[in-house]
Amino acid sequence: MAVDNFIALVDVPDYRYDKNCVSIDYGKLADDCDTKTICLMSAIRELSSNIFCISEDKKIDDERLRSLSGAIMELTDLAISTNKVAQMASYLSGVKGKESGKCHSS
Image (tube, rainbow, N blue to C red; front, side, top):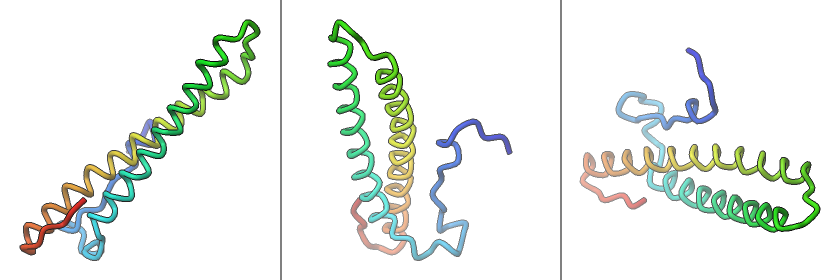
């Protein structure tokens, strides 16, 4: 299996096919990942704001600019990954809830 990036490795085990996963609370997992995604996006916004301020300076610190840009790229991958987990966990929470006759919120 060839994997080019972190996002491709992120997956949520599906209780329907992996009996070791029946105790996963998909609703709580979805909520947790949604919260983490929001926090990551807030950090990305703050870093972007810093880059904007730096770019307005007459004397631009190239190293600081590159460092902030790199942090944004890494945080973006993490945000995409936590969003991917949240979406899959939310879906599985609904499927599991429908099977058991219970409504699981996410």
